[in-house]
Image (cartoon, rainbow over all chains, first blue to last red; front, side):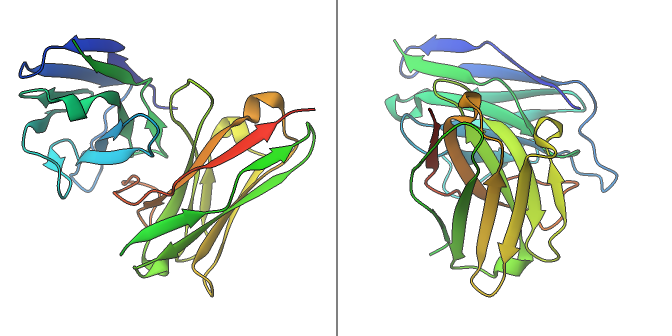
Length: 111
Length: 122
């Protein structure tokens, strides 16, 4: 099974400051079709998860452009250029090349 | 609009079974798959398995093999997840989410159900 490891597990950010979350997979997420199946989700308190980023760097419809994803192979990063109060919650990376596996989650709070 | 509506909360005794439904609307059901994801209290997301609404193919997480069955009813655009031999550590919120029609290369997209709380307690 593919293991997804996120760091850090928690993050406290001042509004307007940037934030970054790392996600590493135990094997390459590059599919034979040329795409890399790494996703980012945000679960706000009391809500269902919501898709932010798919295939490493494509923002889902309606996601603000302060969110960006990057990486390749086994190393990936989610960046928030300027954190806002509404960004609090738990962020999960997930691989979709072989079945699906979520990372442990990174809790983001506002200072 | 595109949505998934799940069945209501359940309370079950250890050893029993539970069947959660997930009714899709607003899109062509058979053009996608459904993933099921659960979240124990205070814990992270755990992927349980996937079913293709196109042909009924399934893939399950290894730890649930033998206890879980996912099915679909294309006539009503509804997906089902049945979990048997329930234990206390199966207490969780269970989510359905729209996924790709194929299992290799994809993931849940922007359409998730509201979640169904299943409590296992004697």
